[in-house]
Amino acid sequence: MDFNVKKLASDAGVFFTRAVQYTEEKLGQAEKTELDGHLENLIARADCTKNWTEKIFRQTEVLLQPNPIDQTGARIEEFFYEKLDRKIPSRTTNAELLGQYMQDAAKEFGPGTPYGSTLITVGEYQRRLGGAEREFLQTSAINFLTPLRNFLEGDWKTISKERKLLENRRLDLDVCKARLKKAKLAEAKAAAAPDFQETRPRNYVLSASASALWSEEVDKAEHELRVAQTEFDRQAEVTRLLLEGISSTHVNHLRCLHEFVEAQAAYYTQCHKHMQDLQKELSSANGDTFPNAFAVNASTSGVSADPSPLSTATLPGTSPPSRSPNPSNALESSTLKIEEVKPPATGTRKAKVLYDYDAADTSELSLLADELITVYTVPGMDPDWLIGERGNQKGKVPVTYLELLS
Image (tube, rainbow, N blue to C red; front, side):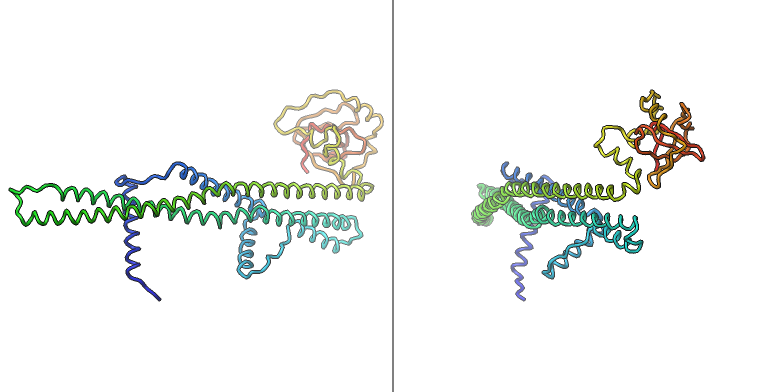
């Protein structure tokens, strides 16, 4: 091992002089060379770019992997695979795992049963959603996260290194300026004309010798200052060129952002299509068996302009709605026989009564505030009304007087 004591001592001396200069600057006891305005603006812009790029990068990681435990495990796994120079395997998404569980459950319940066959159908579409999510994650990681990470771990580290070197060159320059200033003051003091009446010849000779020594010290300090100024100017130019490259970084990140938005739009389009196909398949498969299961959902899908029971239910804390006569209510009363209505196999819900309600005729059910009743709808019924049951009593109830619970 080559251990150079002289170099170590020299480096320690340089570090000490820089530390003294930095401390005196902070205390206002030393002058500081200021960077030019253009370079200062470039540095401020670079710091802003780094800070916001880091925040966007971290939050995008959270968006793509919301669970912090899974995110930490994924990072550790990626670290080991990178060190081993092996390809990172694709991980199963939560939707794919849910789909697999549903299909496994269908095998236990019996794929021929209505519940089992529906589990198989929904599980298949969940796996499709998971596949679309995995493709979106991979595309986003390659096209968006990787360029941001390369900037933070590559370009920014280089910029930080050169900026630190520029700061050291600036400290060295200010040290040389302070040293030259002190040498010139000492030379001027030594060169002052002595008083021959009060000064002995021996002291006069010593004074002349000191003046010559300080002149040499001034020449040495001026030479060191010129060298320090040259190194500072060279390092400032290198740093400036790197900082001006931030503009290219912005252009590159803009392109990556467009690709991220395209991938996100394609992902949500795929998910929307899968869910529409699933709804159609479930409706066609279960429509005859469970005619009322999707009645509420159909009225809230946005296709019909009529208000649904869910959308027209009154929120707690509001005043009871006014009872205006409904033209279709009389028609329903004449065609719909409440005593013949049977509750559906599925689609019934609990509801809390918000306000007292007095039945207008025998087809309606009177209500008391805060009581719980069972409600459901039947085909062809006015969406502003539901069938309510309380014990052996049954009748139509207005939706606006209810708060649907489950």
